[in-house]
Length: 251
Image (cartoon, rainbow, N blue to C red):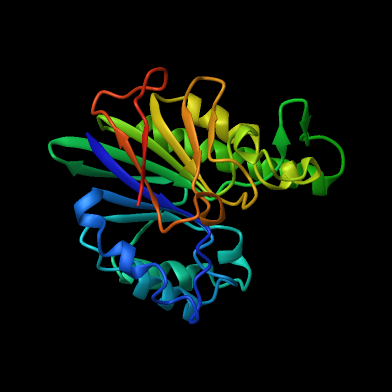
C-alpha cells in the first residue's frame, strides 16, 4: 500500500510560515510522499518561494509539485522553480518522476494545466488568433501530460495538475468560471494511460471527489476544500483506473 499525502493552494507568504509545519512534521508516520497541486505562493515571487521551501522542505518524505497560476503572476517562475528544487522539492511540468516505495515504483507525471472548459461547454481551436492560441496552449499542455504518463516505467501512476481535469470536482463554483478552472483535455490525457489517481487544486469552492470518463479517481486537494494541512490517499500496488482502491485519511 502506498500512502500519498496531498494538498494544493496553500498560498504561502511570510505570514503563513509555520501554519502547516506542525502537521507536516507528522508526515513520515502517515505518508510515503507529499504531492503539492500548485498555487504554492500568492504572487509567484522568489521570496515567497523561499517561504514555501521553509515550510515544505526537509520533511522526511519526497515532495513533488507542479506550479499554479499564482506561481506565474510576477513572471518569476524560473526563479521559483530554482528555489524549490534547491530545497529538494521536485517540480514537474510535462515531466515525471519515479519513486520506489517499499519495493513499489510510484510514477508521478505533472503539469500546471490550463483552462478551456469541458465537453459541450468548451472553447474551440477556431476563429481569432487569440482564441486559437488559448486553446492551442491547453492542447499542448495536455499532450505533454499524456506523453509523460504513458512513458512512465512504474507500478502505479498518479497524475498531478493544478487545473481540474473534470467538472465533477468544480461543483460549488459558479458555472460561468468552469472554463477558467480546467479543461477536458487533461482528463483525456489522464485516461490515455493506466492512471490510478489524479490530483488537482485551483477550485477553492469546489468538491473533493470526481472521476474521469475512463474511470480514474480524481481528487480536488485545494486547501480550502480539504480544510486541513493535507489528505492522505492509499493506493494498492496493483491499482488501475477502474477499480483502484482510494481511501481518504484525515490528518
